[in-house]
Amino acid sequence: MVNSNREDWKALARKAAHEQDPKKLLSIVEELNKALEERENQLRGGVSKRIATKREGGNELLFVDDEPSIRLTLPPILQERGFQVQIAASVSEARTAI
Image 1 (cartoon, rainbow, N blue to C red):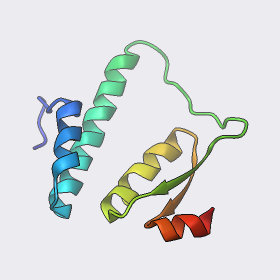
Image 2 (tube, rainbow, N blue to C red):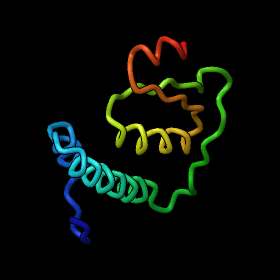
Image 3 (cartoon, helix red, strand yellow):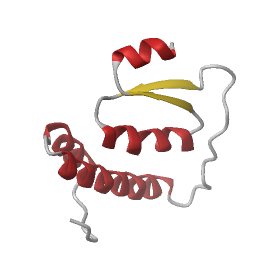
Image 4 (cartoon, helix red, strand yellow):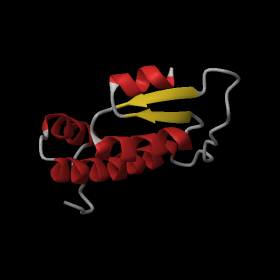
């Protein structure tokens, strides 16, 4: 699926939302990450690279998802954006964390 004419990131997101096979989902999410990175670079154009800075309060996030591939893929992106991410795999884990 990797090529210079990547699918539109919105189409990839829709595809990921409907995928049931964990291996296929992980592949789609990886491709989506690449497409979003390319899109971000296009939007930046000649603008200097934005640097994620810690915000005063409100930068902590509890990420809850029952899919291991999602828990492995999305939190690092949020951390790159300046969030302190804690991960939970279920509602009971999230309640314990809270």
